[in-house]
Image 1 (cartoon, rainbow, N blue to C red):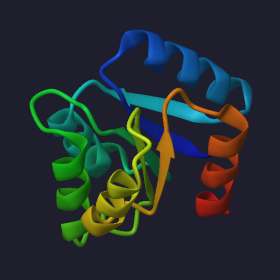
Image 2: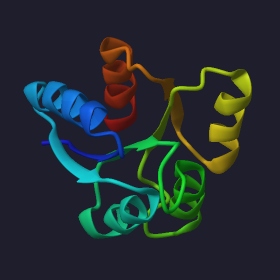
Image 3: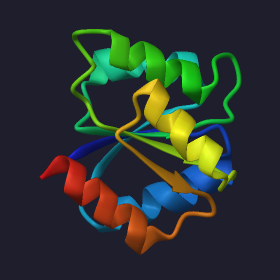
Length: 120
């Protein structure tokens, strides 16, 4: 079973997305902020990470950059999730090391395709 680490501070977003992913057969782990997300990337060793960008304590940009700089976690795919649909955000996600980028509100079918492409 594919394990997804969902790093999301908004309870409604976290609940909605996790329930839909679980129905598709994914195992979900949670983190509520960037620091906890970074810690769980190491301790949980997920198959993929869905990383919100606007997070407390440590934002998603920094968490992605740190995870990709660490030899023990840099191979784990990360999809950056943000409400900002600007091309500059997409470019910044790539610069920080994200493997893909998607916007919120989430188009579930599109996100599912990205998850499957990065974990197969």
